[in-house]
Image (cartoon, rainbow, N blue to C red; front, side, top):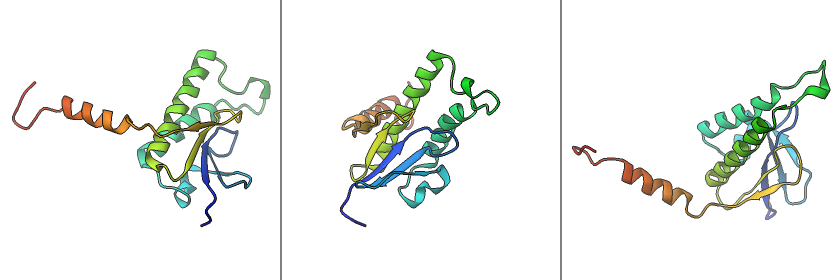
Length: 138
């Protein structure tokens, strides 16, 4: 592998993706969920969530009425965009700092996803606080 930065982008496009991979300045290429493990490894849970997110938009494709494709309800579309951003954050958490993660839900300008320095620690603390010790009741 070269010293060039590996980038994995979560991006929707009709019939492709939802991952787009590039190394350095190379042109990104689409990678489907089943083949992503050849580039980076994500948990099965996260891959299933990304598949569901992608399917929510893909299921709106209508070849007979292309003017009507996509999520028509603006509130539902905003939720879909927000859900994708959260998935990209989870990707960054699983992939780590050595890979650049971007999010571009509809192919527009990509947002670079930064690591959440406190996310895992806060989740661990909340889990420890919420989990009673063996033999103790809450």
